[in-house]
Length: 314
Image 1 (cartoon, rainbow, N blue to C red):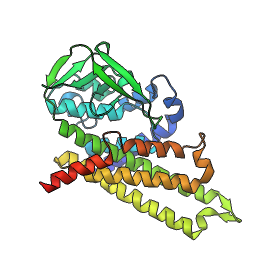
Image 2: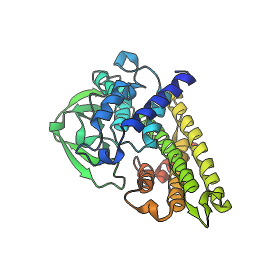
Image 3: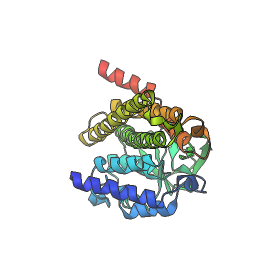
Image 4: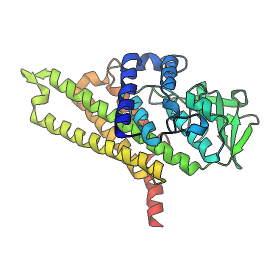
């Protein structure tokens, strides 16, 4: 896609989420997400943006998937997209295509049993389970799912174990899956951090102390300026992570920057909103929890930095 098409994609997804998205209702539902909204996103081809046309996708790239992930991150929209992106990456790395058209259409929800937690496990139509010799597609009836308590209530997590046999799909490149996971969380984090800044600036213009908006105080201006720098650099790092996935580079350093920037911005959002930020009715605490959840979802930031350091030392 060219720049104008990417801008149009961003605007389309954002408009849909503003008009039809309801994070709190979705996270309280039995599935943990809004199934009608997910179907609408499927109609837009969001789940298959990075999937080649021969496998039923849009034939774009991860640069376009990044846009969708960032917009869902902005609104903390619960949904199967992140898990679907990881599952697609695993399947594409094996060369296996039978499941990809349905995943790309959003009509099949996959769960990749990789890392500490499995995404989409409670609602998955198929589980992709890495074994010693390759990747297997296992039906839900042959999988044991154990829900995990999560800090972030907008993202349900579980651990899974296969109790029966599955269909052999091929040998996946799990290093590639890890890179896609890092770039995906970088995009989510950058989008959410930008929203934190927007909400904070808006509040600072409305909240008044000593007869003037608190945003007019120099000390708070400096803090919001620092937030702005973090948000802008996270956006650049997110783009760099997506480009690394497209070109075969390593997105680790960009990922680390994005999740740490999001954590700092979300923390400042709490501080600058004051007591209202820690009430259940306000969304600030949800962004704060998502930030810390992202920083540990696929291993801790320290783990990723250590791995990167070991690579650079070779």
